[in-house]
Length: 354
Image (tube, rainbow, N blue to C red):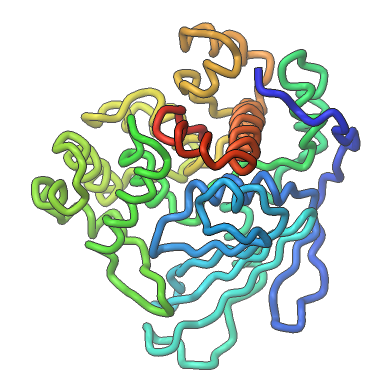
């Protein structure tokens, strides 16, 4: 079982995010219970090269063990504007405060240079999609804190939130490309996809290709570019075509139908569908019972046993999964930061947490 800090805080967080007055640079500031260290650890192992940049208060390069133990940092990426332009989303993460601003990219689309960024409501929407800032953490903590497995994790990180994504198809593509490989390899493959098919490059970043862009690609040609197995390239293009044809990964009105549509696609099984329900759709009761790290953390071999153990965590099973994943990755990266030799020796053998 993954260990937790002995000096774990016990406070139950407040429930309602508070919008603070705008910062001097016009950033929208959201003050809400928020575990920056856990979120930055997640981002350090998931940011897509060329699509996102992550800078932290750690001195090590992004994606290394030391960078994943930072307590504050900034992540940036491009997002499309409703007016046909392009915006640079700049998000600063610190404990109990998240600030963000949307900066117009000159010369892209219809928005004139120097025009004001979109509304604060749009910024808050993006932050909620990415970091779950609207979730009621008091309810999460109340429901999970007495569980004999999760209790110590919840006590150690009561402000932990479940990361999502601003681009549902992007996280789906990365998930497919990450099947059966390490997180580092998944980031590399996804970066190659963006480099090959990204429609716009600006400010040193690439806008991730849409489902329609990927759907138009030839799977064999894509396999050569990405350097992945042919079956993986076919799965990616098949998923892109389904999304381009109307499969909405964010739809919450009939999650069972979305799951059924996903597992009907060649190369997509229950784990991928359940993981996307958690990361792309944002369902807080989603739980990928087949996940290797969750099975190891619980000491159970069979997904059905994991599913049975998780029933009592409903309707917050996504938080249960995130607590187990975060506890695993933070412990591993803290150990690796203290021992570079160990980091090198375990990087390719250990299963990737979510």
